[in-house]
Image (cartoon, rainbow, N blue to C red; front, side):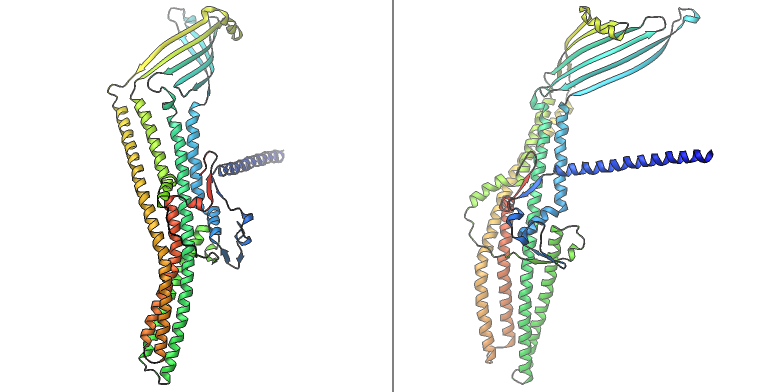
Length: 538
């Protein structure tokens, strides 16, 4: 028998464990579904270039890969960072969080159901009665159910039905039911939609601010990605130039050493050639190190957190060469920046929010004066159903009308809050003006940099061409014995600097354009990217 009982108990325990685990699994599944729902509420970052219209090797999510190698265009880099960057995902979730505060503020105007039930038991001692009749037990039961709602005009409406039962040992049971409605209207403090909806409007502005922050963050992230891409391109081109220059320097060193061995040149000529080889090797080491740093930065941007992603080799397929046209529309770009810059729009939204705050604090200076009216009807009987029949009697009606007034003497707290709000609003106005001046300066400086790099492309190309002629002439003079290895090395060094400067000018023009688009707030539009949310699109 004991064994049977033990088996039964064990069965019950096992069933309980299974049930608990089932509920735990359901809770986990429900949590995962909830997380998925939250992720779906994030603003979408859309691109005008769909995968179907891109070349096969540039289609979204279809990078051509080899053994630890990817081929990456500038368009692919931008799409990868939009899809994979975790900081961007976190910023999108921040927008979801800010949107919930708007829901919270609107919820203050939602209807509210309330209910209450209570039971009381009381012993009453009456000294005038005999000893056996002194103690009376009184039982009281109360229950109420109602609905209340607040309106934007400052009106509060409350409807309620309540029932009360009173019974004791020596008194017949007494019951009453009351149905009533009450209305309260604020006449000074708290009056009007402008005050009562201010918090909702502020929450809406917070959502708009969050979207502008997301826009600015996305712009900066894309700009960083594109700049890192072109820096990688520049580093690889510099490596190719240094490798070519090193090969030339080694060839020249070998030729000089051969001529020294046969007695054509003195041994003093070897030092300059060997020093030039050593310098080229130094430059190549630095260039390769710089390229590795840019590669790691670019991979971290486009594929953060991927296993072994930092070991991936990148083959860059986009070329930096671009048509160089002068910037002739500075006035239009300044106007665009005033309209499109996300940080300026954010400052404007904050100013609007602070102005709403002064509306609230200014209203808070007024006394609290409320008008109220209450209507009700009560039915009395010794049974619950009988109380409703008592509603037909006119004497069961009740009516109340009046005003309530309250005001703090001195009102120092409200005065201080209002003054702080006014000071904050003035600060916000100054911030907008300051942002506007800084943005105009930023655009002008960016245009100046674009023009500088644009002109440098032609100038450095001309310099490189003449340096090539100089090297050729110096080598010819060296061959006939009218020059030295040192002069040839100096000429080749100048040519190397000219070639590097030409590549830097081309890539620098690309980077300057990115920074100009960033300064005027048009980078997302130029890249065909838009941010969409359920309520707002940028």
